[in-house]
Length: 93
Image (tube, rainbow, N blue to C red; front, side):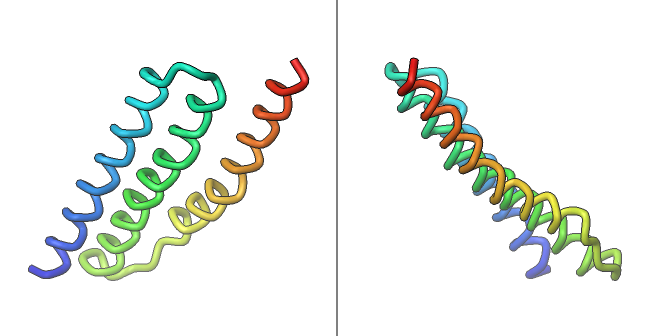
């Protein structure tokens, strides 16, 4: 019962972060501000959804999944680097 609540809470939190990041991408005026919203908020949103998936398979399927952890690691490494490259390209333009 507690595992289901934690997984549900992580999914709701991830959804809220994804929604805020998408809303920021659409509504912010400056391209640099638009870059900041999805880079930070959506990364956290996808990360929490994947952590919820790891918890689900660990608690209910009784097996450890490494795929989701690798996706989170890859996302946390590549999203800031991509944002930096895009911001540098914008500054040089």
